[in-house]
Length: 252
Image (cartoon, rainbow, N blue to C red; front, side, top):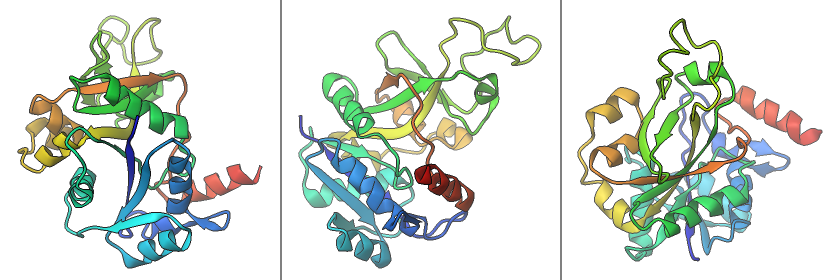
């Protein structure tokens, strides 16, 4: 099975400017991500950026880079530009790997690509893992997903879903046995036919309300297949404090 990995990387960031170039053990973070992605079995791994500093760093470490426009509203729009520039076929699969996940498992990248290849009715594939702590279900920064019996997403939300009416009558204190509570993992595989159509899709009210881009696709009738993993991946790097924790972890 063939697939392409694209790693969007922006220099500008409200919480952590220059994050893709943050040093981790002598190599920039985005290079670490590209190295992990290269071990997934991808046919190509491309860093997509609008910043010459990031492009230079990626080139210096021998990885492929593609310059993109600096006015994209979403990461999916940037992927669509890459797919168009590469002239990828409509059936081709592109996996979006976030540039701030230097410990991402190569097997997870491949699994998401394989999941999309196996589910022809889906335009997108992603991943989720079990939620094991009640506080995570209640946390709006933890995105939840509910699936149908075929493994397609019914809905993504920052709210605690599914809601156990009786067990949660007095608040979310514990998770009842058997409740299928899943945490969405921010990795996506797309068919290029969807990427071509995405820019023409009108933003959805639920997308704006939840601030979840994938809800636009669902609101327009596109299916998202979800692979459930056994364990949660290592967290990404959102802030300088996250970076320091990661550096300490790697020194152990």
